Image 1 (tube, one colour):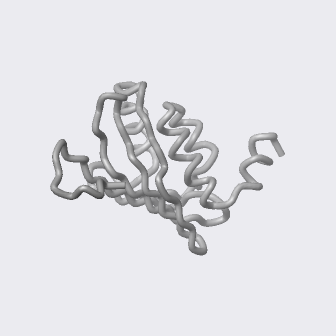
Image 2 (cartoon, rainbow, N blue to C red):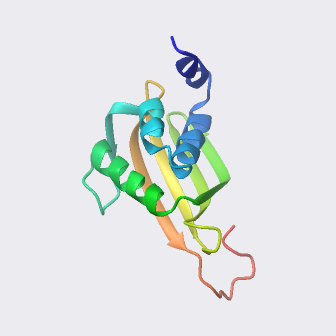
Length: 132
């Protein structure tokens, strides 16, 4: 077993979901998929085919276009094989960004299903509580 495999084996599913997102946001998309995604992965993003390869390529393209992306995890919740991560994602430091929720389903300690929901942060809002 490699050191990387030993490291990821000892992580909770919640930690794996967060590390997956942080690794993708840092531009290491292929590494994130290789480390955390299972062979039967599928996703529910309506803008891409439902397989791992199409989403990975889109994430790699986004990382190349936005090398200074910022992902700040606000909350991560795990229940059995499901993890929900609420984050503030900015494509660059000047971007207001958006609130994003990723829902992961794990099987055999690997991500096998993913949903993502995003809402842009408006420049002005009557809600003084903010989005986070």
